Length: 192
Ligand code: ATP
Image (cartoon, rainbow, N blue to C red; front, top):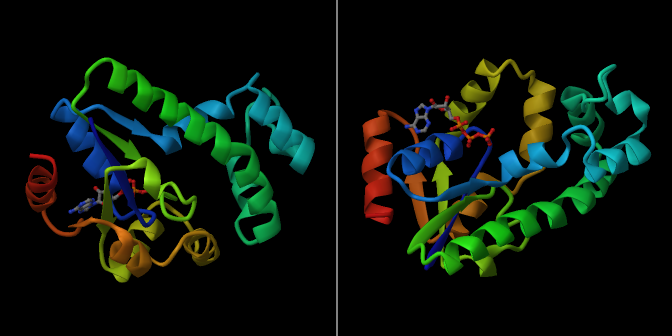
């Protein structure tokens, strides 16, 4: 089985690319989705987050207040490291299990979407790495369109390697700017 690791900066098009791959029938697991599942009410990781950052991380229904957590950790590298120390091993174990399942089912290729692929030293887990990329101005504009302010954008960008460094390390770079047909054509070349 060929295991592809799909990474890239925030808002560069990882999810858009992954959606196409799913439509083409390629097995995909997204570590952001795993991260959200891990902090659902009743999950042990959510309890740990409350122990670390306080009850104010929960709303009245006991669900995680994502914006409050993001405000707490982006801009405070120590707090972010604490949060990552809780979540990253669980996230890696979850996609690792899925990849093992696919392997034992005889799947011939699969994709793990993992924004912090290089930052978490996960490179050795993949046969092929792919990085989505676009111009910094485009990335910035996409994040503004999500309703983020400048401080939020800066905090998120500083929590990751610069895009250029990810592009250098990846086996393939997918230029995710302009028509989606061009994105698809590039994906077809990497995963024919
Ligand atoms: P995050 O890191 O927050 O998960 P992401 O890397 O998964 O972000 P997307 O959620 O795919 O990025 O967002 C990219 C946005 O850019 C989407 O709104 C998408 O429609 C838009 N877009 C425009 N042109 C392209 C393109 N050629 N390739 C990919 N995305 C594009």
